[in-house]
Image (cartoon, rainbow, N blue to C red):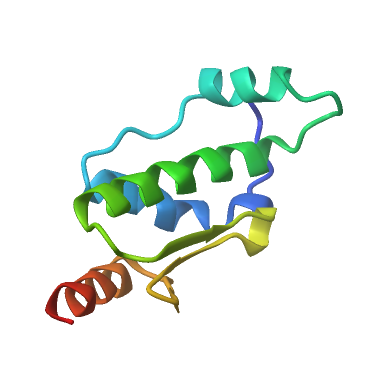
Length: 104
């Protein structure tokens, strides 16, 4: 089990809620370790978890809504998700951004 720094993961509950909303599994410690072992320097495990999580969300949204703009920024506590150039701070904001995209 990886002991993550909770401060660095302050955005993670939002990303976890998005995964759950779409029926996607959270990233496992084994997946994080797999990536970490490939690094030649001591990795930041929180960034690996966030990167894998945000990439999973982005891939899902791009497949479900072709043409949608999804960007992820990963830097521990400053990590963020943007959809159609709108920073997402809640599940409702994500739903709204997707609704705007579909109606646009």
